[in-house]
Length: 102
Image (cartoon, rainbow, N blue to C red; front, top):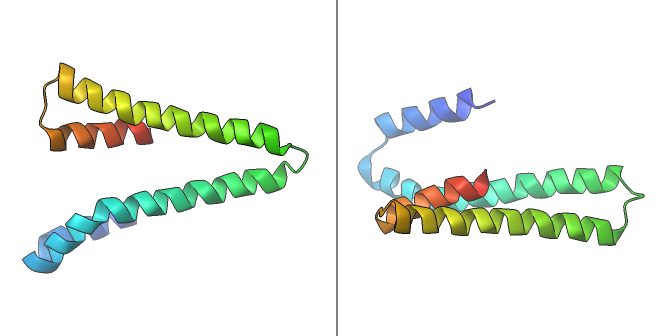
């Protein structure tokens, strides 16, 4: 499931002209974050439909815990990368995104 997108990305980076390549690379984090959010929303919606006996309260608690877990990962990843590892801001943001998404 990861081979095709990876192969397309490698091919695009190799053969694409510089200007469209720069535009896509600038927009890629936003697009990928949006698509990940759509995938997560789909999974949550499927779980919600399958577990119709689950109350809104329990679902809300689950959603709140998932959001807080990822936000804590983003924050702690950035703090660790920028303060302890003393990385540049762009590198600290990249680590923060990786930690928060995991």
